[in-house]
Length: 159
Image (tube, rainbow, N blue to C red):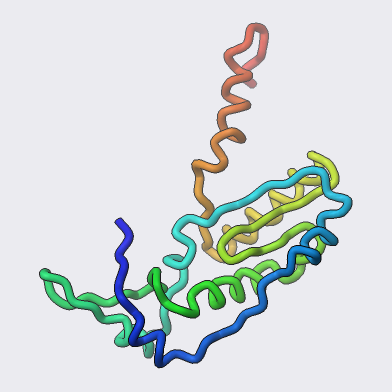
């Protein structure tokens, strides 16, 4: 379930963070020699970011069950995309413009070969694990299913 709170009044009081989005021309320049692309979608992206203790009281909302407060960034805050993209750019700073491109809550890994892509994905997933950020597992189904499907073939050893 996705809670949708009307934060228009709070957004009016907020200072708009005009985080620069990538230009399409810059993207094409980065991808010019890449032939293999992988997109990683983060699981409930904004909900992986906790508020500072001092800001939690600003997120109070009322339901028929009583007052509640968000501990993580909710859907509907004006600066949520900018805050999240800034974090992701800091997390992957060493690899930006080399083989990683971040656009809001999506991570694009681009490589010249499949072997290079495998190594790049390994690096990106290790960073996500270290930073305790979680990708949507359903997107990785083919990586899990392919080796298991190969085991169904005749004369393929299990070990």
